[in-house]
Amino acid sequence: MATYEGPYSGNVTPGGTPDTRELQHLVITKVAVDDQMSNNCYVLRCRATDEQVLIDAADDAPTLLRVLGDGRTTKVITTHQHWDHHRALREVQQATGAVTVAGEPDADAITEQTEVTVDDRVVDGDTVEFGDIRLDVIHLVGHTPGSIALLYDDPDGTPHLWTGDSLFPGGVGNTFGDSDAFVSLLNDVETKLFGRLPDETWFYPGHGNDSTLGAERGHLAEWRERGW
Image (cartoon, rainbow, N blue to C red; front, top):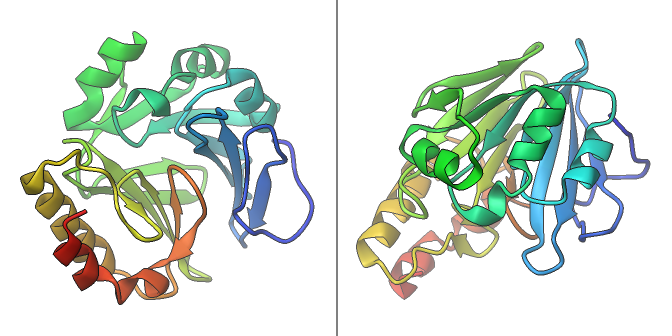
């Protein structure tokens, strides 16, 4: 995998330089693709084995493959079924031979849209492992039926969480005017993320800048009241 110098900010733009964060056991690289949608894609590399995974092959396969470099990419995880998060899945999977992973309720839709079979259809409480790294799967219902978040509970640091389009700085993901879906998503986010994880948990969304649970926790009641 290519490496990028400098302190991590999480601020990336399509066509710009990826941003890399180095933990004791894991290296995280964030890259944005597509000028219109500005999707975030994340390459996670195990330091001990150099095995790596990609979270959301959203678009621009040449850029993603360049970031992946010559590393051993064994899995591509899709956080949810929406088209803008898997446009490069087929090309990346064919180039790397990686196992594909997605939430069980979204897996068929992903296959229909991409013609890529989802090899590992995960549910809440499952794990995705690569090298010495373990990601816990957290199912969040609302943005889509099978949206997942991925938790790395760093044994030597703070937790790190990839939330797809289920949680952003400033609110939960879009539920497209469906009030029941909004309540479901906010309930899941409040219970499974804020109710489980400490304030210092750093989260990485599917678009835009990162945040921490502590920075957002005080706004949960406000989000519920406004209904989006």
